[in-house]
Image (cartoon, one colour):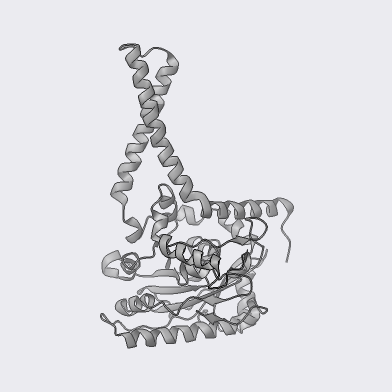
Length: 390
């Protein structure tokens, strides 16, 4: 494989560290900018009122006029965005505001190349029937110069007249594989799954920050709530089919167990995922992202230690976790991430599923997930530990 030139590597590094920084700080920055702008406007209005009052009705110098214009613009922006924010509340539970231009920005291809990240179709769902080794070579060929062969999924397995609920495992520290593969077109999702539209769920708290919420919704991100997910799975509500809804099942708690070579899936207490699939009759699609935990090391935090106890309590309170991770500072290791999508599991529609029906579906799903892991682990992460359900 041809190695990227120096400036390409630099661009890839800059893209990776920018993405990590945005993940960690965009929400806080949004609040700082918003509250800072409001605070500045209040202080500036007070100071200008004192100046105008002291000078009578005359405005005075040209510099004072410029200050008044700046204040007017700031207040206009605050009012306009505030009104939009108020009227747009809850959009993250109604399909958000996806923008194709955001999904297709060239920078996401550089982020994909940094690791690199590959979207791999399980051989059972490809439109041809190659061996496992051939499946791997076909899927990775598009990342090599001069080899643009892309084999899409079998359309009979993923018809566009229904929706799909995808379980993404593991969470890792950031879930960068989920973002690159499903929130962008860096790995040609629309070519691999023609006619399907991907969506990714994330914590509701991520939509509380100004500007940050709009950024997330432009990437087909929705709130990981019953209302937000069921909206896209019900054609009567969203008015469409072909929705490919990706849920990072382990969530924030699973991030605390993310470390190289470890695949610990937090699924034992997850029942809502399967109940929703039954209530809507939505096929379940298992998905394993090999290499996702290998991006960062994490400070040792076994269950029961003081650090983990504090982290668990904080996660329960704040809904997001605080893993103490490290690699090359914040820059993740350049480790391959291969996201393997398995075959859909048909699910009957049961409006009021029983506990037994939910448990039965969960057992079937976890069995398929485990088989998918065992099948592709020797190819994509042969030195990793065995899969562990927690």
